[in-house]
Amino acid sequence: MNGQARTTHGIVVGYDGSAGSQLAVEWAAETARQQGRRLTLMHSVNLATVPAFPAMDVSQLEPSLENAAKSLVDEGAERAGATLDASQIETQYWLGSPAVQLVDASRDADLVVVGSRGRGRIRSGLLGSTSYAVVAHAHCPVVVVRGPEGDAPDDVPAPPRPGRDHDVVVGIDDSDAAMRAVDAAAEVAEREGAVLHVVRVAHPRSMEAWTYAETAKGGTEETHALRDHAEQSVTRAANRVRAQHPKVVVTTEVLYGDAGHAVAELSAGAGLLVVGSRGHGGFTGMLLGSVSHRVIHDATCPVMVVR
Image (tube, rainbow, N blue to C red; front, side, top):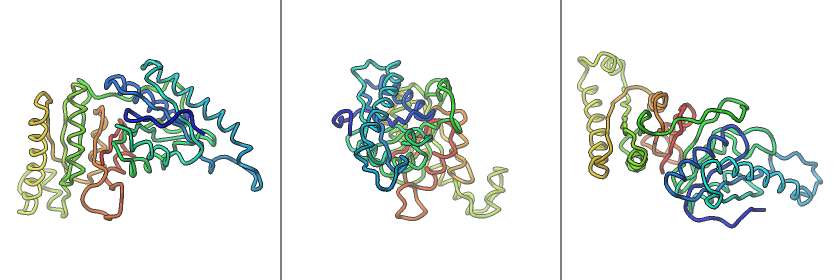
């Protein structure tokens, strides 16, 4: 079942009625308004969450499931309509895996937005695992908007957006995905009039390195090389941004410790955190790196993951 044929380009947002998906729709609608793009709102009914008897014919359930799904997307469209004209909003509803449908839609989208939590049975289309699956497999950048813990009323405050008071923070390493993340973060910073803060987390491998990080004095040849490499890395990224986006104010910082935790900590004052989907290290078969996974889980502001 579906509401309309697949749209092309624009912003796609998943909606299941949860507080997290409500925030995701509002964030996506405002982004669509600023960029002048269409918004496609999607809901998928995951049959794995629908109670049924073993001998039940699924076709008997479809009318009620379709009505419930249409009601949900209409609810989401009404929420988005507070920001966008109705002509800019499309709705789609499906029977099947939410992650599969959103990943499929990402082939033709400029951006996919998901909430990080879901709830209930019929309304459980966007659980945390779905968000992670979409981030790992999507063909375009994905923004994860974190909802409150558990169920929450409709008046959940919207997360901050990038702007004069909230920086865009991008975490980098030496990977190609990190450079694509820098480019995406710079575009957001320029559009929103925000400062771009480029961060590199060095990984000390000894107690001496930790001591050096704490005191900024002394250190071994290894710890000096570690910091020099990190400083050169953020400087190259900053110069890349200044060359392509001369109006963007760029700041840099080198931190020590666990990369995912350190970057996520910066979300407290940020409007958006941007990371690449994979970095160096870990298992080569992993589609979502440990750093981006940790940032999505721990950050309090929206997180954009760029492949």
